[in-house]
Image (cartoon, rainbow, N blue to C red; front, top):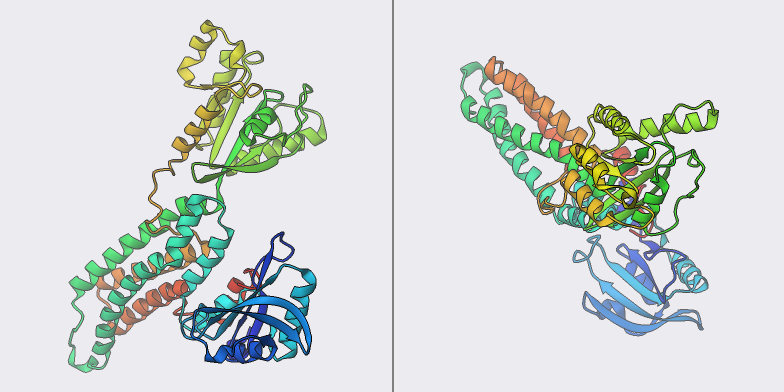
Length: 458
């Protein structure tokens, strides 16, 4: 994707979701000729004579043929999303109208926008840095309060501002070290090594916290994967249906009904939980069921949390204790769940008490609210301040890890004194990797990879 080509053309695309049920569709143009192209087909006011950020009623016409009555929003660069002239036309949401209007604009000289091209222009023109641009895609994909808040915080520059401050401090010292190279024969030291060491240690500490935050940030962004496991016919599918409040999984009295994993998600107090119903764990000679059991064990290892379900009419306390020990060996947080609580005697409850289980009846929806509260408590995400800086992007984590490695070399060079040129090289490497996150350092291949994942029209 040539950045030179992008900066010259005027592009057009449908900005609203294609095929969506709704009264209105929005078509967006961006580029130096956006207003002139629209003026050729819009009958109303002269858009060039109008102020930025104004809306005007009129008709879109192909010659004398009226295609639709529309509202045209005018945004004049650089005061627009892309920093270019931008026009947004609100039409009626008819597939025929949309196709006619898009074809008409392309006939007048606009070209069809590529995926993410509007946001790419915002980045290239200095409206957003790269991490903010990626947050735009996260904001569009957000499906919970928590993921929305994290994406919004990053899009508004929270993460970028922190990196910018770190980078500026490092640049100041880098310039002093570089200056020493100009006086190499005089053996002068402009950059105080003790101060540089303190700075690097501070940056190192901040980056380490950012890397650690990825576990929480990724969960907020993508949801908490929760595996529902247990022996066959203990009520796992009934529990999934109770959690989702719909008949998502087939429920049968026949053991081994679930042969593969079934996944769905719900939102609990702003946090998305992705529940995975699995095949019952038991020894079996059925090849298909055995494959399902193997897949269950793999899903359990990948889970952020496990709900292990027991049926007191099937399992003895000794059986339950044995299974709990096995699940505990995975070192993954888990919740012990006793089903069919309506059939339990007080004596049975006392025998299970040391396991600290939650008692439910998946069939009658008893204990489901208590289970949801426990899930929130186990993942410990409800108390996270989503206005804190959290890393949610694996690309950012990898760049931070490379920055950390380069900073380790800087520290080594300070503790075991090396010449200024080697020190400067390691500092430059640190700055390079930090710059990769915000786009201060970028390549066309990187931009192509990032923005091609956006929807067209954004």
